[in-house]
Image 1 (cartoon, rainbow, N blue to C red):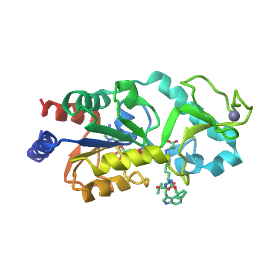
Image 2: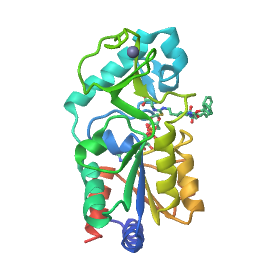
Image 3: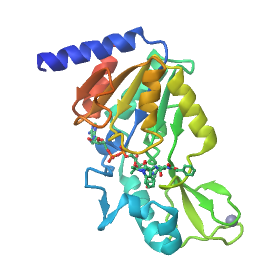
Image 4: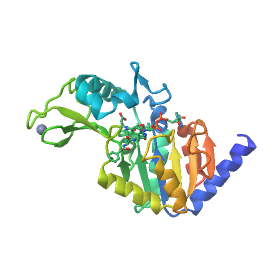
Amino acid sequence: MNIAHQTAFDQAGDILRRATRVTALTGAGVSAESGVPTFRGSDGLWEGHRIEEVATPFAFRRDPSLVWKFYNQRRANLMTVQPNAGHFALVEMEIRHFPDDRFAVITQNVDGLHRAAGSQRVFEVHGNLRRTRCTKCHIVEHRGLEVLGDLPACPHCGGLLRPDIVWFHEMLPEDVWEAAAMATATCDAFLVIGTSAVVYPAAGLIEAAKRAGAQVIEINLVETDASETVDVGLYGKSGEILPELVKRLH
Ligand code: BV8
Ligand code: ZN
């Protein structure tokens, strides 16, 4: 490990050892080593569509089966993925080093891998691929990874189901957002892991953590829009860096 990397690691280790409360904000990068494609890594394209074009209420109104094809493909992909060492390192931080609700994961990911790894306090600000919501009676149901088809009907009212996902131009779930904002405002250390930090309001939590006096540590393959805001940057794979960080907490 080169000297610069070593001191950044030592600094990050010091910040975490001194912290009482830690909050992590994660994005698609934390699931990349599990085999879940990121959004902007594949320059945000899915079969030639940009994520911002498919993940919107307009796209769903215009062509619901196209949008369901997109989500069914991602649900099917989840059949073959498992949490990776980065997810498990965050579980160890929460259970072993910051118990009693002193650790929280705010995730933009909709793959459910943090909970699958064992994380307890997880705020899914963009929803979850395993849940559906009825566009008519609005019932939200946990459907696991069962095959739903391209125009799934609500088992209760026959209305068209949609994924329980926050699309672009849609509000984030109020209660989850409140909890995420609280976990950001009350932490001493804020980890920003595997996110390009371009999607708001989630990316705004990084500035909010700084304003609240937290020390911010970025973990990413490359520098991002958040890099000049953070206190320490650790650049490499989160599945390698996070276990390394946990070792410094023993
Ligand atoms: C809202 C669910 C408004 C979908 C997602 C113009 C027009 C319209 C809207 C806007 C606009 N300008 C700004 C906006 C707001 C918009 C927005 O921010 N747009 C961006 C694109 C500019 N936001 C919204 O619309 C939000 N709603 O604003 O409401 C409103 C206000 C009042 C009243 C009513 C409404 C809603 C945003 C939520 C959108 N939904 N997800 C789905 O998943 O299908 S966002 C989507 O992007 C995912 O959730 C994803 O998580 C998120 C962010 O992407 P990342 O997670 O960061 O992933 P990305 O691929 O970008 O980056 C991966 C990173 O990992 C990279 O940095 C890479 O280097 C790193 N990496 C890769 N491998 C590794 C790694 N790091 C470490 N280790 C590795 N191995
Ligand atoms: Zn219904």
